[in-house]
Image (tube, rainbow, N blue to C red; front, side, top):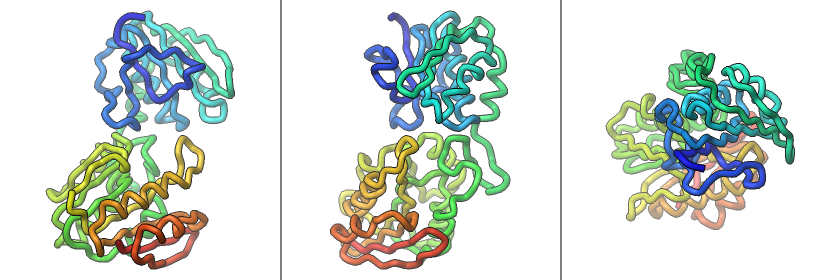
Length: 305
């Protein structure tokens, strides 16, 4: 295999041959190349894409992949059958390619040679791209968490937050809704770092949070270095799904990270679905834990370091 090769996501090694040195294109891998920034036809070696489950996001990614692959080069797209896999053949054919389809390990795997003149790419890219969502008054993009509505848990937390002061962090900031609330209500905040694993969310947060005190980081919360002396407060709606499956350990790792970066006496305000047993994770790492409110399937806690 010669030429630049792209990979989007983490295809199972037994389902796809990804050469060493392939260029990672997923927005969920910090530091990856943005697929939107690739020049047309630059992937002369081809590409492998693990297609996202959401229709608008998936078509957006596939259209960009078709655009970036060189004419005649091979594009392989796969997805679990129950997460969009049954649709990818038809979607690729809609871009003008002749598609071969196979099934293995609950995945649908489609391959095509990029046609010289693909069809319909611009429409798919427009439909899946970032936009100002009028219903919420914020910039967002299909594929970002709760992309076209305000998450109910985050909205509840925003309504309960106190005024903060000093240096803070919004862990898993999404498109920046909580950060906007914190900065608007807390003039004594000196700096607020917004962190998210999703490059698209961080890009939208930059548009939504127009405040000189805001800092932005595309990073795994567990890997990012914070102020050595600790920070004064954390706000967060920690994720508890990884690849669509519930993963309580993910939210627990956010809790431990918050405790690590807070100063003694610093506070962590978090919201979680009511069924998640986060109290057991908070008790060993915080001096005190207070249940602020529990209603409508959610619970809010203030945990003091």
